Image (cartoon, rainbow, N blue to C red; front, side, top):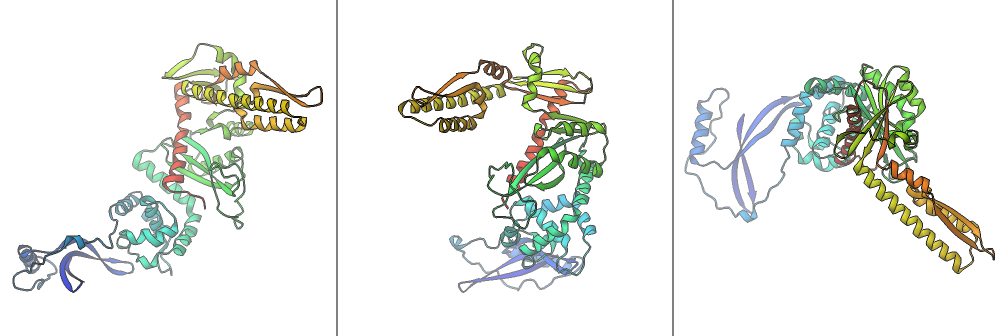
Length: 479
């Protein structure tokens, strides 16, 4: 440690202030960093510092101050401004967390120092810490964030060495070690926080490209969670623990169906972390009879959502009154499968019931209003029956939630004009009223009660939360 005298000249005036500086060694030679800015020192402080420099142990620093009385300078505070400020706390904490998790040591061992001007492990840490403190693109890191943080002092990488090209190349160097990195972090975090990997939650999302993405073979049009079916996209699969800790991810083609990814993801995760006694939790978009047979084939345990159409098989159970209330507004009922290998869990939510009923009423009102207008149009002028039938098809297609409530007939009048008539299908209306707010789960975990099974399935929200973090806080934005 030593004191450094700093002189600032502005408009012909000269001011002096002091900084406490620490000298340390790095792989690229000695470096200095400011520990604290002391400002201007009064007479007593000058005497104390001089005495410490002359009589303290270790390296002495005599002759700090000139003899004589201190000079006082009047400062106009309205003209004072802060320049070249550096964000320190966040990046320092992030670096300490990285060291605690063994990430720094892992990166050092994985990327040994070679002929590159800046070690790749340092650039990887730059990416990690910037994404943690202020998530944004590599270009913004290079042009703004790095220079405004204390990373140059903490990592010993000068600001002029950090550019977008070097950051992108660091990602390319890091990608082949993705599985090793995931395994290391999962193991280390399990040791630090006692994370359990007995319940694995699997979900998918997508992110789209601004442009043709002609150089990316996986960029294709498909079902867009971002409501941009006009853009090429890729789909991203993620497996998280019951507390929402991401364990693994894979990137698939943009038009890949969710159900076709299950076998691949399960095989990858089991090869990385072992099979053990895990319970897989997936929503109904992942479910197919082939996937259920695959999960059963090796004795894997699962809790799955089911297609809504499967509720029809449990109409009698829906009418029963032997529901178990597990919390306000939520009832469940266990329905063992005939073969005894599975159990089905009927769930009925009051909030979901109110929501679905409102949706059915809203869509039914839209369809009926549209049919009334179409019938009136046919009475005022002669319209082609085929054209009217197309109009009816579009109307029902735009309001599919209540489309089966109506039976519509487009007939011919006395003069060959189109005539629109419709009736309500009471059988469908009765079924909709009975099934509103209900959904069905299936599982081969037969030693849990209905409450445990339902709570395990609802933890899929942790996987959805992990995606929200990546797509909002981490700004997994359109590419």
